[in-house]
Each structure stands twice: as C-alpha cells, then as structure tokens.
Length: 265
Length: 287
Image 1 (tube, rainbow over the protein chains, first blue to last red):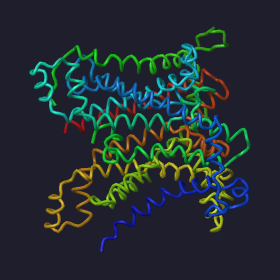
Image 2 (cartoon, rainbow over the protein chains, first blue to last red; image 1 turned 90 degrees about the horizontal axis):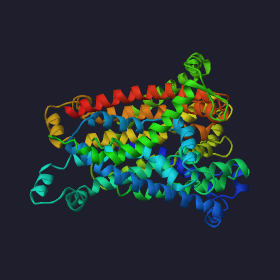
Image 3 (tube, rainbow over the protein chains, first blue to last red; image 1 turned 30 degrees about the vertical axis):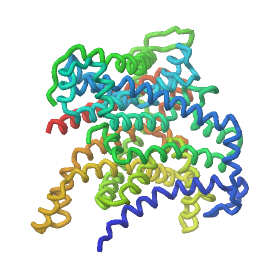
Image 4 (cartoon, helix red, strand yellow; image 1 turned 120 degrees about the horizontal axis):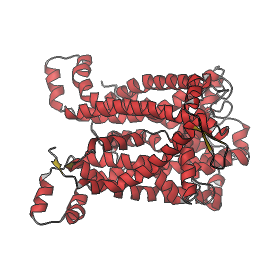
C-alpha cells in the first residue's frame, strides 16, 4: 500500500498550526489570552473583528494597502508588457545587459534603499501618498513582471506576429487586439505576483508613509508598541491580511511555480 | 526562438527603463554620496575617501552580522531543499487533492512578512502560544525572548515554515514535466526507487532546483522583516542579521557614512550572487 500521503499531510499540518494559533487567538478576549493557554477559544468573541471594522485607523490601513498594491500592479504590468515583448522578439543593442540589470533590482535588499527612498520621495513631495509606495514597489515588481511575461511570450510562436503583420495589422493594433488576449494567462500570473510582492512588503511601505497612506501592516506594528499589547486585536488584523492572498491563490494555482521561477519553468 | 535585430525595440523598453532607473539609480547615487563623504547636515559634504569602507570592513560588528547571516542562510538551505524535494516527490500527481495541496502549501508565501513574524511571535510565546506552551509542558525549557538558542531555532523554523513551499512548488513543476513513459521504462527495467530518483527525477528537477536554491539564497540574504518582528534581533544581538544591523546603524544611530559604505558592500555581494544566478540560468536555457 502506498504511504506517500503521510509526508505531505504532515507538512501541511505543520503549515497550518501557526495559522490556527493566530485564528484561534483572534476569537479570544484579552483576559482569556493573558489568563493562560487554551487550544480553543473558551468565550468565543467577534469583538476584535468588530473593532477593526468600525475603527477608521484600522480599516483605513486595509484600504491604503489595497490602493497602493492595485496601483502598483497596474503600473508594473502595463509598462512591463511592451518591454517583455521587445525582449522576447527582438535583439537590440545592450538587450542582455539590460535584462540582467533588471534582475539585479529584483535582488536589491530593500534595507539598502530605505533611507535614500525616504529622501527621494520627500524631495519630489510624494511622501505619504499611495503613489509613492506604488512607485517604490516598481523597483522589484517591474523586473519581476518583465521576466514572467517574457517567459510566457517566448512560448508563443513568432508566426502569430508575422501573420498579423502580413494581414496589415499595425504594431499596436496587433499588440492590443491579438497579442494581449493570447497571453492573458501570463498577464494574470504577472499581475498576481506583482500584487503578492507588493502586498507582503513592509519595509519600504512603512518608510514612505506616515499618516495618510499607512499600510495595515505598519498599523499593526504601531498598535503593538503604543496601546499595550492587544494580542487578540493583532491576531484578528493578521488573520484578515491572509484573506486576499488565500482568495487569489486559487486562480493561479497551476501557474504559481512558473511565476516563482521568474517565468522560467 | 529566432530573434530579429531591431534597434527600435528600445522604444518599447524605455518606460521600464525610466521607472526602474528612477527608483534604482537615484537612491544608489545617494548611497554612494554618503559612503564617500561626511556630512554635518545643511547639505555640506566633506570628502572622506574610503575611510568608511575600511571602518566597516574592519569592524567586528560587521563580521559578526555577516557570520550570522551566512550561518542562517546555510541552515535554512540545508533544511528547506531536502525537505522541499521530499514533499514534492510524495505529492499526488493527479486527482482532486492536487489543487488542495497546492493552495494550502502556497498560503504561507502570501502572508505579509511582518504578519509572519507576528504570527510566529504569538505561536511561540512561552506561556500562551501553541508552540511555546506545548514545548514547555513537555518539559523543555523554552523561551525565545531570553535564550539565544531558542531564538535561533524559532527564526530558522519560521523561515522553513515560510519558504519551504517555494522549493516544493518549483520541484513539483519540474516533476510534472516528466512523461509517464519514463517511469514505465524504469519499471520494466526493474529500477529501484533510488535509481528512478537519481537518473530520472533529479536531472529533470535540476533546472528548477537551481532557481529555487538561488532564490532562497538571495531572499534569505536580505531577510529583514520577519526576524525583526519576531525577535527584534535579540536576545542581545544573537539574531541580528545583515539587513537588521544595517537599518539599526542607518536609522537607529543615524551613522550615515558607515551605513552607506555597508550598503554598498552588501549590494556588491548581492550583485555577485546575481551574476552567478543569471549565468547559470542562461546556460540552463540554452541547453
């Protein structure tokens, strides 16, 4: 008999335990949490979630995060599309160097850039706006999108382009009417990865915002330090940040490996 | 694919070039400015040459942080890669469970990094967290805020929890590309499971595995948020990795010169690894 299922099951169990810990804590009252350990919430409460959905400083954090993440996804994917097409179809002066240089930005440690970013975006008076974070996240998301899209585009035979040009299509008409629908799956995956990396990043988002565009993740750290240690609230806020990821992951489950491999599987 | 030479393709690349250069080049020059000069505010700069670099390269603090970083990166690679391969090998290839496995396994990858830190902080709290409470009630003396060993273990396990799925997903994608005929041929030849792994599965996974290892190497080399939220670099300095140390120097003490010099050294290391990564990947692609 095949005992293969044991290892994946144990692994998934290991993955779920901390998430369960977080979820169960989010349904407990502060007194119960501090009173000692319990596997299940004894006095089941939604208080923590209600607090988050009624207090503007909390729910604005989610809105701020979603605004800059979506803004970044749109910017990244739309400028990456033509560039990826150029890399996958044409040879031009310095193309290989440029492609490598893009990759180095995906690998740049955000800690190196935190302070200069603060100065740069203060100087152009974008500090504490959603646009600032969206633009800053382009640093690693545009290279990522270019690489993923290039991977998908290289899978489309060049005959498609050539036939369209013979049929009298102009470049942009072909690109928008024919090519983009053809690589819709690739665009979806690239958008997903931009969304994801922008959603999980905190260091730059925190450095570039103070009040108006503060992301939920930064609000969590502030709450932890100023208003005592409200673990239940923190756990509820954390649980809510898992939802967007869990929701979109289902749609790209079959392409997710390709995305992580920068389009190179 | 056969590519045609077309210099006009530069126009298609220009928007990307401008946006990324704006984000990468200007900040990098700022760092270079600080690295070679001393400033006392008011935009007055004094040339310092390589003083800061010598200071950083000689400082024990930098050596310690680099050492801890190396140790951490090698530890997580040694655990995550074999574990990832093992899980990928035993995952189902067909059927309804595939989607369930993929979605559940990918979940940790999509949680904001500071939430990962906070989650593990809560999970490992000695008296009220699931992990901390269980370990202590089993008789282990465990407290990650006080004991360096516990703090290290927790950080490493957290990273394993967070990123092993990346290795799993990539290996799984590699395994799925093996045609059934290969396995049938091996079965007819009476190949042992080890032989199947060594001569069929491993060669097919080589490409994705290189990507996985290098990605894990680089990402763990610049890890910041998760250990910062979990342990704050403590107890003492025991889990202060390169990025955490850098931010402490730059924003905590506002020693801009040494911080900038350290940034550049750090960046050069990353650049070197990148180059290896790129060369390996391009060679893979040509094959």
